[in-house]
Length: 341
Image 1: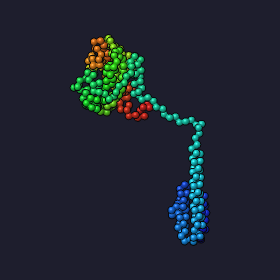
Image 2: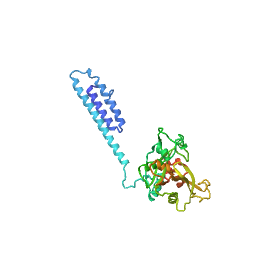
Image 3: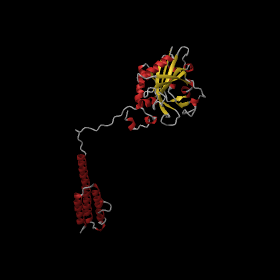
Image 4: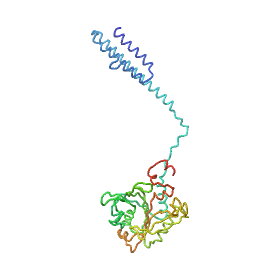
């Protein structure tokens, strides 16, 4: 068979095989077979040296025509198969817009945010302002201005995260009260919610990060009776009008006198049960009259003004509100737990 006939035969075979191909992989195999570096066309062109000078241009032109035909046929077949694949995919994945859509789960407030918002609402309703402050705090504001001397146990590195000798992660939100008293003269009525940090091991009731809500009132003629009335109103709003409150003497460096506040167990009504550890009472918060030295440190005359302060842990309130016995559940973000609220 002469070279011209061979080229025409290659073109015809390629045309027939391409017409039967039904996969991109098969087309690629045919491209390699006919037009690849080791394909049949290449093998023919290697024999061009045997032709006479008169035949070379004719056969060369025919070889180029055959190559162009095969390459165009391959491109057309690829396009045809791609269109068929897309058409089939569109038919199989057809969307019926008349069908109801899937209902996506909607997020909601975290249980700590739910309780915090309720506490804020109660205090705002009593005329308190909400104030925030820095979480990275100077030692002066976190300790010294609050009448906590250098040798006080609360300043031990076992309890406090020190960044430098004079900068700490705040261990309470009380520094916000000091900053407010420095900038604003009485009357003052604020709460300062926020994150605080202490060097505690993580367990069911302790965490190195938790939330506190501190309250402060400073004005003329503020007494312990004002503190009791405020707290009783707050607790009755939080736990119900039938809540029973008691005050126990305590000691805090920044208040004098100081007290811890308990609410009668809402489960057993004081009889003793698992919830209150058979004591009949549940500790809620600490409070007291602002120490005169703290007022002096903030430039407020303790002879003219007095005040009270209180502080409660948000997690503790939320745990009792929802019957949660492990604080870690609030921070692990397990949707199985959070979806219950």
